[in-house]
Image 1 (cartoon, rainbow, N blue to C red):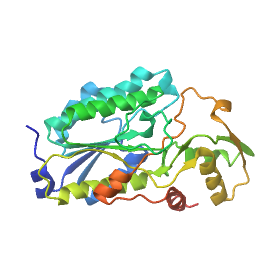
Image 2 (cartoon, helix red, strand yellow; image 1 turned 90 degrees about the horizontal axis):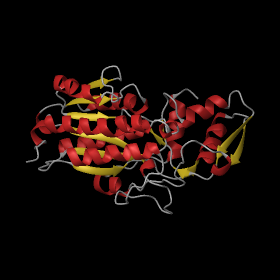
Image 3 (cartoon, rainbow, N blue to C red; image 1 turned 90 degrees about the vertical axis):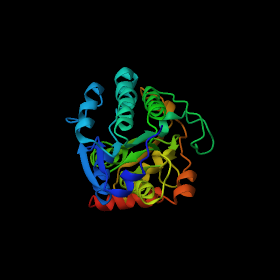
Image 4 (spheres, rainbow, N blue to C red; image 1 turned 60 degrees about the horizontal axis):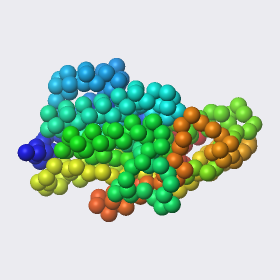
Length: 301
């Protein structure tokens, strides 16, 4: 029999555990979730998904009502040589988190990626499309999705793409840093998607959880949703916008994926269809260009 979350959601402020709390998304979720309940942020030193055998003791002590899992192995190219480690963190450990969510009758919110798709579709990928990853990182993330769906009756599986924030290593911060010291940069112009700000993802997550908290739910939520900004662009056009907004004189040189080889193959077009999120929950993320502008403003640019 599936556990009924209704009493926990509606009779008290939930205890919210955030894994990977020092990462890009984890930091913004830690701020956003304070509007919902008691936030318990965990860094790698307290919750290391590369050692999943230690996770049960952590959650037995914290007794969460909600688990937000942002911790992940994200080094896409290095994963080609470390697929075992990537799968341990992104797959096996997610299964352990799902078991802990089941044990404590908690809702597990897990974040996945557009890289579970091969990028060959000419239209945006919907939640009903069959995943077909073309690199080790994508395979490891798909392993986590399957483990979650098989074990945890209460879950939200949120796929997003091209994530960036004010913090950490991401495409936006890399381009802005390199443009300060180089006169020319080569950027791939034949891979398509949409940059998505972690603050927008965090606010969308909050709205989803508030929906379940406020609704008179009688069944356990188990939902797969695509959460990404509106619009579509290439890495080259994304970089061009960044340099234009910052009035940087660095010249951009467009190159094809064939001329800019990387260890891992990337999806050519991995745009995510967010219709389900918009129609079922009324949640619409901003256009990607607007969010980039707001993020840059928040950084003092």
